Length: 348
Picture 1 (cartoon, rainbow, N blue to C red):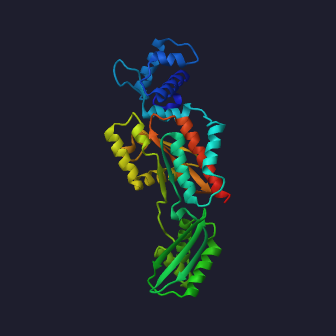
Picture 2 (tube, helix red, strand yellow):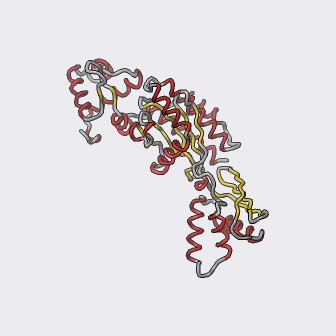
Picture 3 (cartoon, helix red, strand yellow):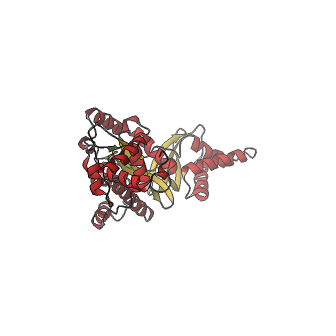
């Protein structure tokens, strides 16, 4: 029983019915309600025995002796992995999402802001969008301009259509001609690479050529060391719909306060989203209850998916809500919004 794969068909059907009914009503589910929703006719006694078996295996809990059962985090996990089917959003919802996101991208940041608002509105949960961290941006073009007092203006154009300007101070004076050579080298050798990959390759080449004392490569390495091609490693974070947490009956005043504090400390959300990006495949991932690394969010579920610029994952988006969530619809919605964001960014 501890191995989810060996849950027999009848137990799976009963567990699925309990999860769906509890998500819909928020009230503990009894055997009679389960019996009414099953395709086959089972006695209440048989269902009660199955529910007791599921409870013993950790899938259900009983708030009160006389009450029905409620799903545990383990039940939601099994439901997401092994029971739920595809839940189409419907043509009207898909059309609304497409129109809200727009047909083109003027600025990626505006698309991300629209996406977070849309996720919150359609899901009735908190919408999150994490933009690309600097090191994951894909280089299109870089330019260095010499300023006074060993300062250099760095202009980075990266995909998807992000332009950044920053000033760095070098340890030694470098001529404009040397800066132009460094920019030409990066643009010719590494266009289309992520900044993270470029940094690794530059220092690798410098190590291999240390006996040659290549001045050009040394200048490029120093620009990296001084932070010329670095920025906010966390990326931009957009959060919308935090007031919806207050509406969730699962959360008392203290839980609401703790959750709102977590949303205000955006670095904690960024860590969670980056963890999901780093450990997930190309599709949607669900973090349910105690799977969340932040203790204040262990009453919540996070549904997250990466979005791409062409073949590069450049950010993540998703929703946060109580574990009593309509997972099939939330997962499909996050997947669809991520798909559209990727499409809009990649054709730009």
